[in-house]
Length: 257
Image 1 (cartoon, rainbow, N blue to C red):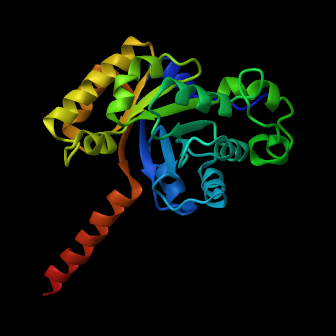
Image 2 (cartoon, one colour):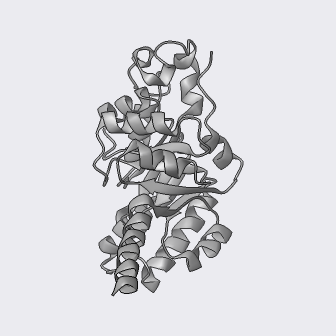
């Protein structure tokens, strides 16, 4: 039995738009709700979310069987972190703060078994192989791992053609919030940041790779898709829930006052 097909990797290779949601509650129930809401993918955030390896595995299990494919953003591109997340069954990985093609190549190597990389073999003891039932996993996993690297600094933008051209990088994701901070602007809606994002997407596409981004400004989304964004984050569980529950409390109090 081969490793499962990765629908995100296939869709990006075919230049199909994939819409997704960030998961920051770090809870399997909210992960299951979001995974069944109509998105193509849901991202378990271990960079800014309070996610341990056990919580990531619980959410991966909760999402199993739902329409949205799971994505995991690791806190850093360390090989030991990537190895453990892959072993528990993640197939699409987002790695933040990649500034050079050398860093991108190191991440790819950490996600692939030899001879393409340096990932250690141990998945036969873990969820990725359904605890040993996916007998051909080691021979087939490399083809199904989707590596998405984040470019979110001026240094990364300067190196973007080389980062995007790195073999094994499936998508380059622009981080607008950190980029705006690095550029010295308080908001990713600043015209200078929006222009930098637009140019970055063009560079990524010119290198023959899909571009990704998350933006909360819905008015910009059609334009970004027209430019070539194909891995598009449109919101998060926490930022959707928090204002809705506050509005409920406020509305009820007004009604009863």
